[in-house]
Image 1 (tube, rainbow, N blue to C red):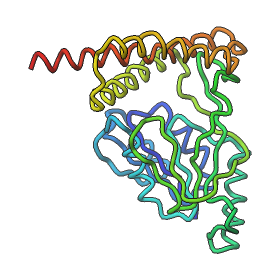
Image 2: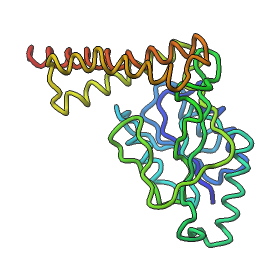
Image 3: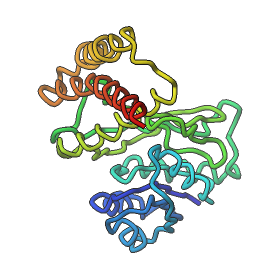
Image 4: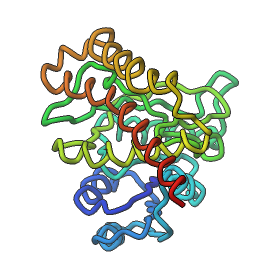
Length: 266
């Protein structure tokens, strides 16, 4: 049995494309929805998903883990609603399930994989990024049930796996930012989450920290993505992605400043 699990919040524009791509091989579709205000839930149910509604959490990996916990399949694929499984990956998943079934869904050996990295293609400003650390952008999303979990500490964390991790064939097509406005919306969410993390860690508004988050980390990030990881190959989209990845540190620190100011006012 193959389970496909998702956590969603206002994903009406993506959910159908995502679920339709897995319907041919998924025996179980699980959606944990964070109380969407659009018709995400109705669309997911229409496509055969079991939907569980909960609260929308700042760290959406909490809801992802809730979805993972509900999976009954021996092989589990965890997706975001803006991701699409390509044909080669779909065939790999089915072949892997067949192989595992022949061994009663136990690891084939001590060195056999229990989870798999999926290569991901990321759409940004109308093109699939080839460099800048955005390809192959490996994410652990396919695993034997019971062998992987999310730490639920950060929005960009990888699964922790109790065993060997291998590479899957095929790709996830990630339609995260088809328009720049989509990127800016998520940029605002992620920088707010980072600012709250820094606040919870008691990061002070010192000159050293200001220099780190307003100068050193932005420059380091830009040079890393645009020069070392050859983001320049992707032209203007590659430049913009590297630039705003650096600006992430600027904005998070300024939002941290705002949190301290608000604390002083109360």
